[in-house]
Length: 120
Image (tube, rainbow, N blue to C red; front, side, top):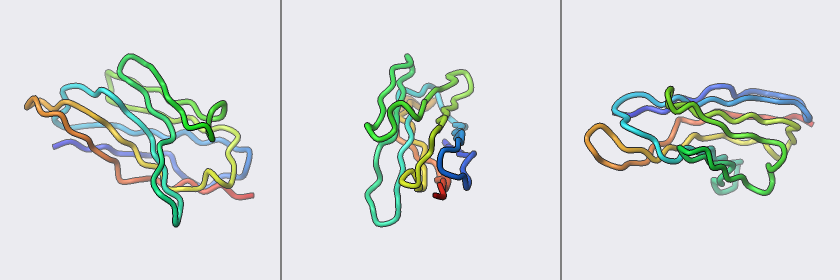
């Protein structure tokens, strides 16, 4: 089985910073794309940022210049450095991975989510 475990969420004042981590474990052969999504109350889940195994990145317009996604392929881990946080960044943040398992199957997994709350 595969697990994605997130950490690093919390409460921060506007203008502050947080760093989220997501570590994959289990029957992972390789991970293609890793990403962070978020879902605020009453809203649809949206892509925040993604990164390929080669390091190509993609960001939502709302976080460009403030958030940075990175990954450690050897550790199957993805990070999200969030700076200049705004109250509208408040949401549950989910890690996502498109990966190949030891058994040769291609699957998508989600983490359990971590709450980020930005106070004004």
